Image 1: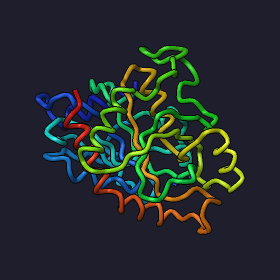
Image 2 (image 1 turned 30 degrees about the horizontal axis):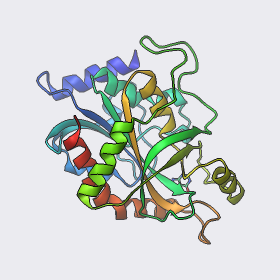
Image 3 (image 1 turned 90 degrees about the vertical axis):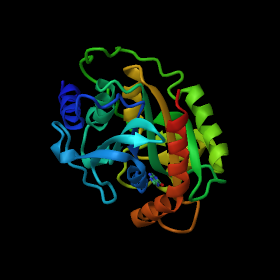
Length: 271
Ligand code: HPA
């Protein structure tokens, strides 16, 4: 299996005495700065990992990092494989399978997202409480992978205790954290104003182009999941400005300090 080959390669690079990471983190657009907080990191370019395609989006460094964060061993992926790059949903979730193959028990996703809830502003952070999959693809299509279930339960994809821990860490680090529903679309276009009004009626708080396939796989293989969205812009039609990737990246960088403090504290306090 591709995940096992990639995991074996990463293990070989980190050495046999490397501790099992307590958490696997995927860093979203503009949020890659957390990588610099990882101490003693072994950095492996995606291009060197067997089975990993190279990341193409500006702002995604495309590296696996294994090291210490908040005094705990972690593995992080700076960059991800988006469906809008042409990857199928299963491939976009491959990093999660690799983390699982390395024995990682907790998956923490992060992403840049547009704010659909009208009170959301650029720079807000939101814990994902639940999601809606409007990517019209599921990473579990096809034959059941060894260890997977055919019909995984999705009644509580985002772990309640981990969400509570994120809120505790937000209080401890002095950052405001919202709670809301994330909707995944494939992109690469941003939404139309009519689509954003539809999402609003569906109960969506934030919209993005990632995370959902990864979370589905993580739950199907029994990992505990938490996820944080960084609201980089008001969704289309909710402000007069057109949407622009450079602005999304800039808003990500502006919130980076608070995001990094929150995630570092979360890892430190993980049971
Ligand atoms: N829509 C979809 N994805 C996004 C957005 C958005 O407005 N902002 C950042 N990622």
